[in-house]
Amino acid sequence: MSNKPIIVFEGIEGSGKSHHINKVSKYLDKKKINYIKIREPGGSLNSEKIRRLILNKKSNFNVKTDLLLYLAARSENINLIKKFYKKKVILIDRFTDSTIAYQHFGMGIDLKIINIINRFLLKDIKINFTFINIVDKKNLFFRLKKRKSLNRYDRFNMDFYNKVQKGFLKLAKSKKKFYKIINSNLDIKKNEDLIINQIKKIIK
Image (cartoon, rainbow, N blue to C red; front, side):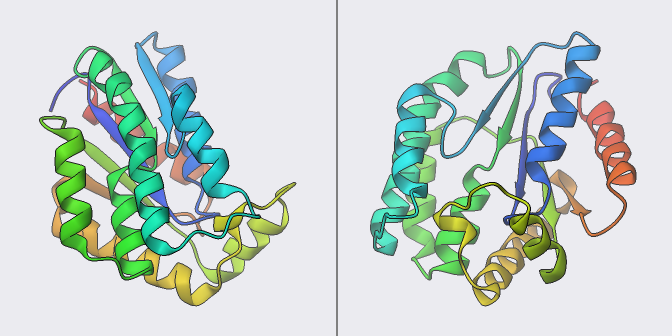
């Protein structure tokens, strides 16, 4: 595996992915390892503009528009990723698997369409490793209640989140070698250690 990999953190709302990506950032800072950290949607200037539009709780897009907006946000990030690809460690909070989990498994959009556009955008860019964070209903809603404000994607029902989470697990099962499932219902410190130990193996 490349010593300058792309490492992605995936999971539904309240699953702890953003917490863990921040912990990994601090670890890389401590080790003086060069990296960039982006999120999707977001990351670059224009992608952040699209993020505000997608997640605005007053927005009411149909599922096809939602898909195209997410992919437009990704398109704006690709140049940033290309710039540092194999030159720095790249940490991404949500990426291609989120599009498949949410838009295909959650909303029923044809997977072929998503895959075609993702291939068109990514070209030769390869994800090296993905952490899938899972969470149960109790912890999901407990963590959402603690947030100061909720965006549009924080307001779905549990049936939708279950479909999405099952989608993530199906993706992880198909490529076990390049995925690690993190059960965020367990002790957070143990999960932090588990992830950092995996990061040490990935970045040699």
